[in-house]
Amino acid sequence: MNHDVLMARVARRVADPRVLRLIRRYLQAGLMTGGITTARNEGTPQGGPLSPLLSNILLDDLDKELERRGHAFCRYADDCNIYVRTRRAGERVMASITRFLIERLRLKVNAEKSAVDHPWVRTFLGYTMTAHKQPRLRVAAKSVQRLRSKLRMALRQGRGRTLASTVRTLTPILRGWLQYFRLAEAKGVFEELDGWMRRKLRCVLWRQWKRPRTRLKRLMQRGLDPERAWRSASNGHGPWWNAGASHMNDAYRAAFFAQLGLPSLVRLHRHLNRA
View 1 (cartoon, rainbow, N blue to C red):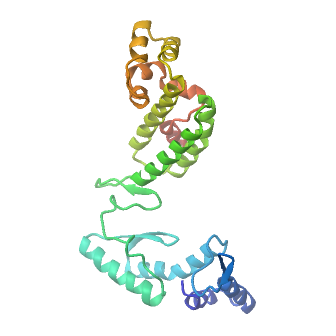
View 2: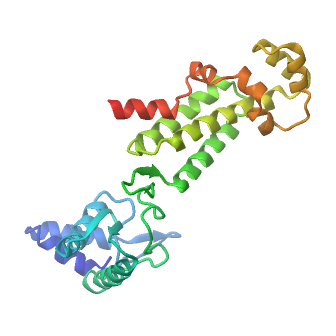
View 3: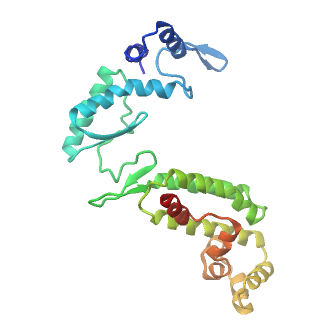
């Protein structure tokens, strides 16, 4: 972000020269790297409370240009999607908007993250779309992968603890994630994650039991007949296989995890959108 171009935009809205000098000093504040202060000639301080506002002031020119051309678009900070009818139109618009950003606003465009593609292939703020004629919002695959990685880490940290304690750790993660993706209209991913989460918890139980005798005892306590419980406890398969097998599903149904306080993403999504 070029400081002179940015300050010219800020000066359109701020008349007080003292405020302008203060903003300029904020932009030029030294950057500490390895104990050495380096002068800052471009960009805004990362994490600074003023940086998002200054970014929007500069990129307001982009919004006005897209509106002037009559494009349908959606922008959040420096992430922007522009919607056109054909690939040829998309390539033409991408080339012209890239020139506008470089020449008029003196910004650098990340060519690796920019592309012309179908909206259901691209992601925006963790969301994507279905490929229907009337598209619906859905959670992007990368967002689901990031959630699973975060949950796996929490589960690894929870080994050796009670299942109820592990569920208490997972609950705020699941609720916070669903709160962000409450606008998603395609609900299949929530059903899939609910099933995956319960299987991971059954896997935790199977690992904690360790010995066939312990597994036999626990399965019988959950209502399995002795013969089936013994076959299941001594089948020789690993924890993940057993966590998805019928004996563990019958012994530890969804209601069991609900009693522990594990939120169902499907039900929570329904509740949030009904409220």
